[in-house]
Length: 107
Image 1 (cartoon, helix red, strand yellow):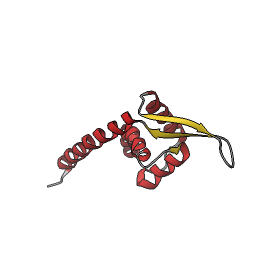
Image 2 (cartoon, one colour):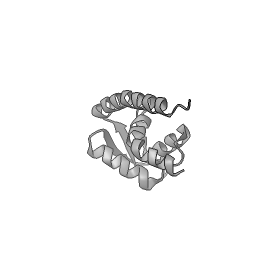
Image 3 (cartoon, one colour):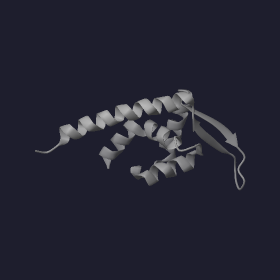
Image 4 (cartoon, one colour):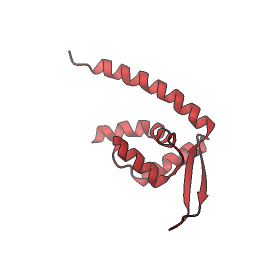
């Protein structure tokens, strides 16, 4: 479990960008997407700082919208820079995973 958490810390920002590549969403829904993709539950204390960091970097844009059955929600979407970053990071990640997999092969 600890190893998975360490790995997740290193790639959470990219995973959030990937989740937003499927369309705009609010925080809870992003967390659900990540969990359903196999990353396990992502605590709000982990997810929301990542969203704020991505927003400050200009990779994610946001706006508040009134809720139909509850409080307003902050919706997030990829900026053009976020999309470009995700594309490049995806390619870099594929190479990295391939290299790690090659090293870990047991003879």
